[in-house]
Image (cartoon, rainbow over all chains, first blue to last red; front, top):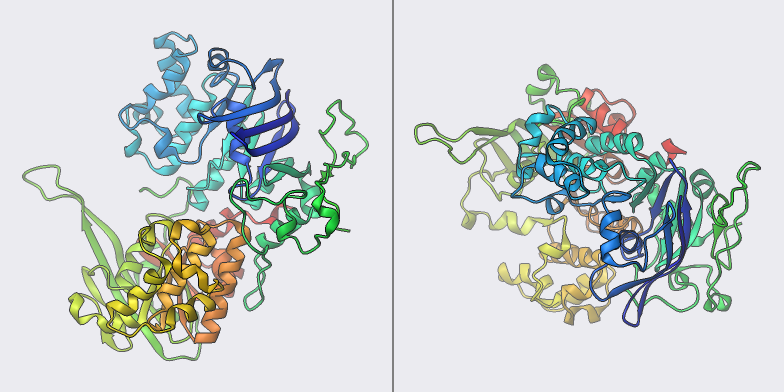
Length: 319
Length: 290
């Protein structure tokens, strides 16, 4: 349904995202993981046509037969919020503080041609659908009168208003308490038509997604079915992330990845991870290609070239 | 903020008693260093009517706990639980409505700032967001030396010594906070906190803003420093799993009360309070999911 092929993002001479290719089928939930600065959010913004000025996208992304990259804003406006919509991390800054919540949900429908009265009715329905208590009262509230979790539900209601084909969530639960996060994740799993879920939290992605893409230095370094990737990671970066996510008993050392994510443009040539990798050799000065996906189950032979199998870009993969 | 729907409410009988921290017995050997007794704090909302005072918010409703010397004490709670209020009172950054906080036997609650020099020297804080807790216009050298200067102590080679202790190169001293990554900035904040050789290091969500690979580096650093320097650690977090990795004792704060406290492994294995159980069930873990 969504097919992304060779997506790149640049700011002038600086290459920020390179050769990102993946697909999402109807009803599928795909996680996009990596640390801050790895290019996850830029990938999502490129799909939404929301890249900041001076930052441009190349490659192709097609959703239900329509192009998302390289088309004029006039065409994108029609798709954004209708065919594909997004929930952002910080619900306080994403909502208009001067507008009642119900009006903000209705607005996204009137912008796409729904009559005002009908949009108002549906706004209350949607607020109920994201399980906000007393939707009529919430619709009359301003964002500051709601808690963080409630605001994020409003964002979700806005994103779902026009029944999009694809929902993109960028760290939607990072600012929330764990008990609220759990409810929000369950809700997203229930209502999302097809999902691209961006997070740095591996446990969150494991609780929600079926397939996962691991990004580092603007590239997809590993991708595949979630269980397969998390149980048998091949790329050394994925291995490091998984090890660092496990909290061993007290008194034992936590596994870490040495150093930190370089600033954009400071990643080494060749394999982007080689300056933090214990297994790096001279070979790694040449950039490794993403391997052809290994099919892990016999029934996973779809038309997608990099769809269902486990692929990685590493010269010295684990095992 | 109202508690999220579906969260079991605190059991008032068990919770309101303000039971002392050593509920579950078997505390560590050191003598009590910080003792909190029946602490309450009531805030007033701004008034909305001329004739009535603003609504009262009971942020803390009678909290008691004991932190022993050399102990690693975790405080776990969600936003609105009162854990930040508790922390501010522990550090004498705010005055309680009633109750007492003693540090090494000396009353701290309600003292004027000029009488708190001993506490400012002995207890230092690392905040959650190293971007907003470090003055962007000061060089790292001055940031790290500032607590010493404020206490009128000689700086000498202490800055280089501290940078080395937190794993930063000596050349970092001449640079500004924005030139460092999040994890490095948190190292600077830790170096700064350690400058006056405190006995107690209070860390308020020090790894929440960090990436997972860097989180491990900072947690390892805190554990090493606590061992080497014999620090008492008060570690505030929303994540019981992180607290379990680092701390021996935990207090779970909910709705202005400590609902459960004791050795962290006991609380983890057999949570006694419905809120602790809800909290544990809500934390996604890799092991649980795969």
